[in-house]
Length: 181
Image (cartoon, rainbow, N blue to C red):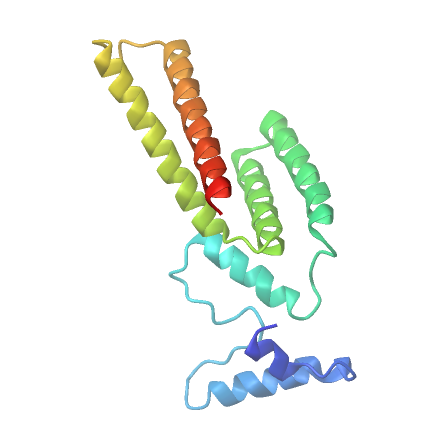
């Protein structure tokens, strides 16, 4: 539990948690012209949406507003995905946007429960995508073709080859590390 949260909680006295929270916020904001009234207030607006979602859910979890375990989140992910599919079939754009937001927020919660930083996971996925796509471009260039001259099927085949090579190299490196250690 964070130092902020632990200073608010007395396990034997759950009734006054909100009062202690309000008092602590009021003390920390003395001399300022605005007041925090919620545990969720005060996160920097400049955070990425993924980071903000993770921080919001961390704060809510500090007062017990949380999933019992990661398995429960999997169930909710399934529900949110089904809702997104329904909205995609018959909903207006606003409904689709809301449902994809709910799905992303739920996935961020799963990552948090697994002690993973969703922001970093997505950043790494972006890097992998860029590397693989660049390898597709290089292979097409080696074949004397451009992206525009290539079919999706051809690009997908190359993509899968690049991914297989990377996974094979990762497994080989892991075996070497295990043998060395």
